[in-house]
Image 1: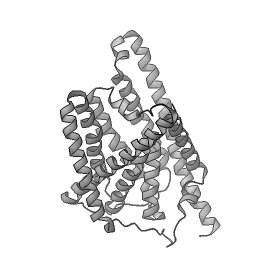
Image 2: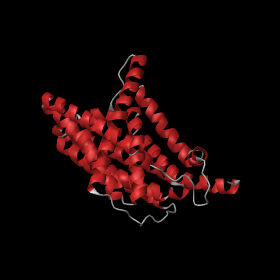
Image 3: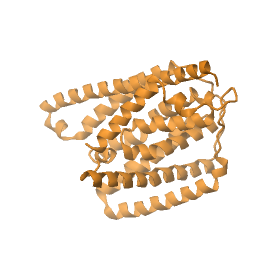
Image 4: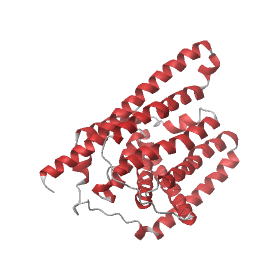
Length: 308
């Protein structure tokens, strides 16, 4: 790969990175404005101030209705490659993909919890579980609507379809790994980063092979439904059901890991770009202004959250 080609490739990824970076800043601004508005309303209506559900809905809906669409517009300015040649997944394949998704989520979530527990012990204080704190403080229906419906739809469009359509020409492997890392960083805390990266890579693999974003959206919705809504619901209402549910998830994780092992040889990704060369992943995707700043921003956030 010559220097001019490398320069053009880095510019391409830098534009993508700036799209996510500017979108992140805009989302932060609109969410801050939403919080100020809710706080002002809460002064006149104490019931609203006392219920975090209203603040949560204001923050998330402002992001989904304003911030994320603007982020998407910035990313769409980067040239994309046609991904119209769709391939179907059978119901059996989709179910197997669901078990593998749950396995990746819970296996790496356990690893993340172990790592954050060690960090917590070293700093003599627990590491905050941001997602757990949020879902435990809001109404179940708000949890269902935002976490299990809105989030999967928006995230799959932004971090899978729009991103992969603009990176697939550099090879399936680079595109899948890049999608997983960008997706993981955006979660903003170490525990979620650890499981979001492999889960994001698996969703990216499915999109790359099927060219149909509906499969990953539906998988993401079901995973979030099991991982957030049902878990929190059982935690709030029944310790017995929560325990039974925990055993079911462990069984699902084991089945998923077995399926991943059985099908490991089928999970193959083409590494060459359109020119038949291998694109250097780190030099091309991260060592540029846009992605460099995006990576630094979220790395700082993750570190701050660890020691908050």
